[in-house]
Image (cartoon, rainbow, N blue to C red; front, side):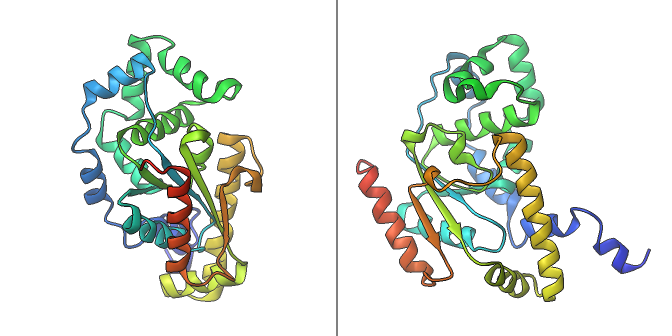
Length: 248
């Protein structure tokens, strides 16, 4: 098969981007080695899942949110979990979709009851993948303070425990960053960006019932076209987080 045809398979470029330079297996193992499956089951069964103060970073591909999250992590000592880490964690632990389904059979309605307390009427019509994502996010947020990147996690957790940050920038800046990061042409960068934006839009419509991120959802919105000193942005975010959650 010609190389061009392989490169243009749907999803291939996105998969390569999400996994770029990430040591997923090592990170997932580090985050899950202390997870006690019986404790997780007990938490789900009782519905008593206390949430620690959590940071959720919302972004589009190429903005630089993961870099920002890692700088913020260095200032606060929180772990960083993005979409790929969540998927890797779910493959490694008792929080897999099949185990959650088994739990639901043993304790009928407990997960739905728990999600009902968290999400209200939004539990109606949740498919298996969406329920799984909600449960994973809730369990992780109950274990230790975390910085989640992407997937609209700020819409899944109790808002009173979440410091939500939206990172934005122009299409031009995003494309330039993708070019440099992946060492590809501008045309290829724009193709990956378009693919990612479409995937994100479909995900938010399906999981959160939203077309886009509304400004009122966030504690802080950062335009990285103008706030180009990412270290200063991380300093400001850490300061604002601590002002909201002084006990952390």
